[in-house]
Image (cartoon, rainbow, N blue to C red):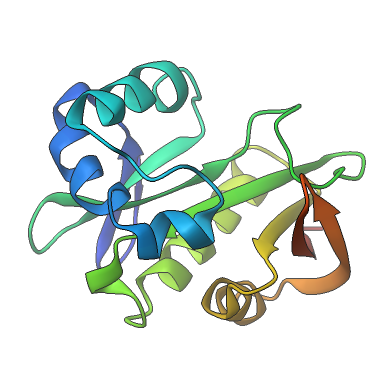
Length: 167
């Protein structure tokens, strides 16, 4: 568990499926996050069970004020990256529900995850990839000190890659 001023980052739990569905069924979120929009509560349950829970570095972003999961942040499993990471580098992925866009919460979560990766995991570098149209996600990366590496193409989707040295 990682705590910030407004958030608790903790592993996903099966009972989080309703909140996940609430935000992941919003096409505004899924379109820019590069994953399919959730079509049912069962799909959200399956994503939590098959993808989130087995990844020890995938965290629900819990808003302290409401105790509700409002987004997700974590390390992309090795081999599932959208851009080839350098040695001792891991890709970070994140998204947040539409009602919370532009409130600084993703930046808060990313700064906390970065500290965790440096201080607890001992990583040397982090990578972020974004859809080239996802200006908000690119701004979050920049606010947290990530620097643009290059534009790239993955599965016919143009993206931008950013890196942050942790040493």
